[in-house]
Length: 514
Image (cartoon, rainbow, N blue to C red; front, side, top):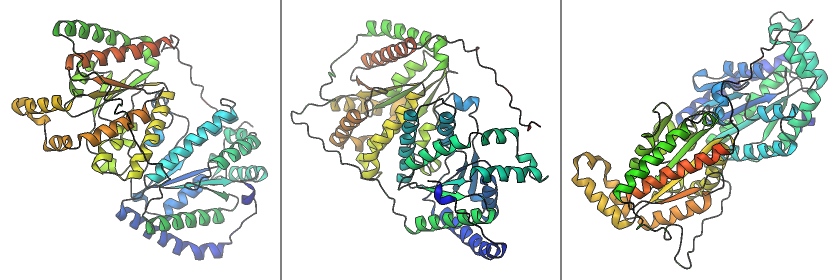
């Protein structure tokens, strides 16, 4: 893939000076249109060999464009905070909102390339990461983003020559360290690994643009023109390019499904409830303080029919935990800030660090439930939502997060009884709204969506637990027991690790050895 970038392109000064003013004006105009449109985020990845002009190109874009609507995110080795969360967490939280341009200096490609060169992952694992990246970028594009990926290329001789030139100039010598010269030794490995990764991530929705980095003027003009053309094309064609998704076709021939098979008559008497509640709350408290949990974290996802008892169940969990150890995230309609991002963004940002628990009161499943039934998103959006949710949960679970999901089911008659009870009790009136009554009219549509959701997103990493919730006592104990059993099983599968036994960081010598 790099061969086309080894032609030896060169732009003379006169041609460059003549082209720049018009290009700058056009880029600024496109930026203003992008900002006023507020429907498209632009994600620009700047990657490539050392000395190929990545930093210089970013500086040129800042000179040519309005920095108020431009942000640069530089990524090196993950920080301690980032290491305690899934690998993609730091990139998700840095995505630009609609109407802005975000430049990534270092990206989700950096770690797989580095790990493969150092022999930390196999070729098969590299290909799996590439497939994961392809799905992530497809999600960004389907959510409306323009994704531009630049790889700045130099030949091995060209890279060595450029490093020498930078080192000789007193104004740029500081930019060349021993680390850069050591990296030159791995040039051939980088060429092989990056070339392979670029080939299998060069997709129709997010293609790579390989730019020869030898000539500064050629490189700057090329990036500027590609960026302008892509922004203009996207602004002129606001209709999103959706990847094809097969429709959901549900036929319950015998009338049985995951909801109809629940026994909503299950109950627990008050005496047994108090005994078991104390037992499982105590067990949960012990497990949350287990030294092994310091190396894990947990996400509890609560979904259910209106008035099914999610809040009461969550309060019983919180009563067993140290308030410093958990956070409850109530999910309502997205804010303006959240609407400017992909729909999973607001959930990624709340993922807990190791040793902590995040409890979501309603979740990312709104995309395939309320948004589907109420028509708040397109059919293509909620149809692809199943895959995006499964990818999200798999990635989170793969990083060591324990994902536990509960669906609380009640009957229509019990829901009606609870609605009327809420209207009568003064301190519960705030819980019942006209929207709740309106949702009852779509009971059948919601039941259909729930069955589709459970069948398509109950996985080995993150299975659904269906809770018979007509009796609150029974539901609360079942939820606590399930949490304890799942947490116990996860902790038993890992060795005891002393959290104070951390490898010491070795400070790198950034000075070039003489």
